[in-house]
Image 1 (cartoon, rainbow, N blue to C red):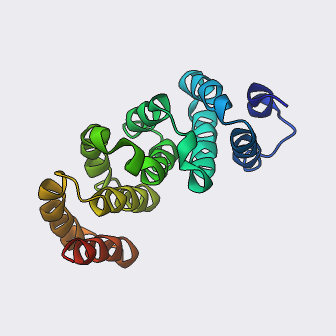
Image 2: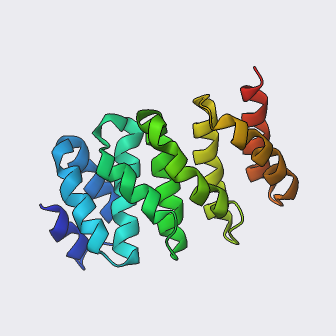
Length: 172
């Protein structure tokens, strides 16, 4: 079954689509370019499904991510749709180590998403930022003070804990 057919299939539950798409990506990594093209043209729900599929696939095989995949994730961090934002952040968390030189492109929107009203958007931004901090790049100079400020204002303990643990690990 092709990627486009899966996205358009009304008989599939929306929650089934990312898993099916991810399975195809893992079986045929070259299909990621086709999925990116579909995502770029898709409405928010389908775009989120595409990005979630990439996120699932890169969790077990980060090497399938391409520059275009990273570009899509970075651009999608600024989406209006919360699910697109959070799936993009989770994708970046999985592939940050592959694109260390390009992470300054992602950081401003990730930091902006730390102030989003949605808990999952803030949590996902925290996961991505912590993954970036773990890489010990020059960005850490900017990120460490930002993490402290975010941790102070964050109302959810689960999210605050991500920042505090990342700060602790960065100090080692």
